[in-house]
Amino acid sequence: MDIQSIIEAIEKMSLMEVKELVDALKEKFGVTGAIAVAGGPAPAAAAAEEEKTEFDVVLKGFDAAKKIAIIKVVREVIEGLGLKEAKEIVEGAPKTIKEGISKEEAEKIVAKFKDAGAECEIK
Image (tube, rainbow, N blue to C red; front, side, top):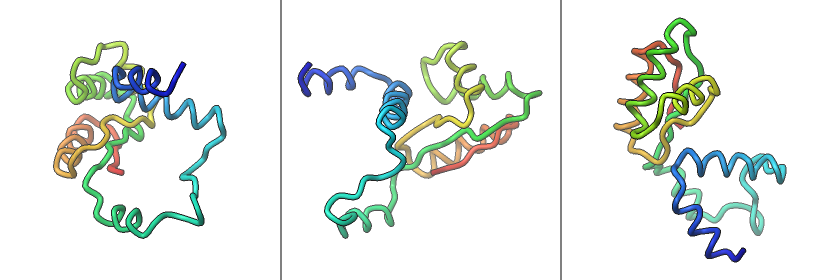
């Protein structure tokens, strides 16, 4: 299998599938954080982190009595997600719900989860 076919396969995956792939690769190869290249991050990379424009919403935990309401919010936030998949995400907390979104959208999503009885954070 060549690199181009791997890239094409990844392009066909959903964001959740890509995240699961990345997590599995990190676990398989023992990667625990960013890999330093040539002595550390370039100054441009450090500046880019300071001006963060994309955020992730992470479901940290939830009130067990409100599990059904939280599953409904997951299905609302992640379009096209089935009941089984939404339940697995909720039960697998902490889980990233949305990635690479604006701060305003992330804040709206966190508010929905908090109203439903879940604990979320923006990263």
